[in-house]
Length: 197
Image (cartoon, rainbow, N blue to C red; front, side, top):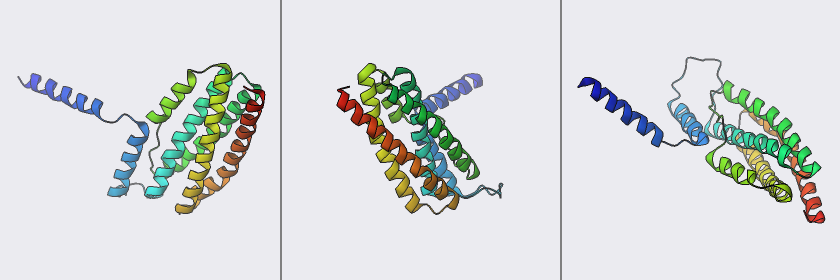
């Protein structure tokens, strides 16, 4: 009887866990909020305390960076236009560097960042991956233009809100790279329009 009770309890716990949110960004945000709210972890005196704005920025930047690398890999293989392929390679290289720096900043602050993209971004990647040829090139570059405009705004806003000096330095050193990406993908977008691609 006791073993049946334990099996039932374990099954109910497993079902409850499976019904909870699986979105990696939501999980990271929830964990970080609990850490900030409790402020109970005093075991690591070398950790830098992260406030809400800093932890949210690091989570969101990680989500975006992982998406950029993933889409860059797709562009490298599925892109038809040489400029699109080259842009994809630049996204991989630049965003892998940025992702590594974000991971270090997050670890030093005990901020949990997602290991994979959010459900929304996963859907965007999946949708884009269904396209081929000219359709892929256009959709990818259009997405990159919109995404980099949004990223620049988010980084600028975070730079104005965040007090953490090291995170601010990362933001200030990354903004020129994001602007370079926007200039590049905007030029490619115009070229594709002129070619009717």
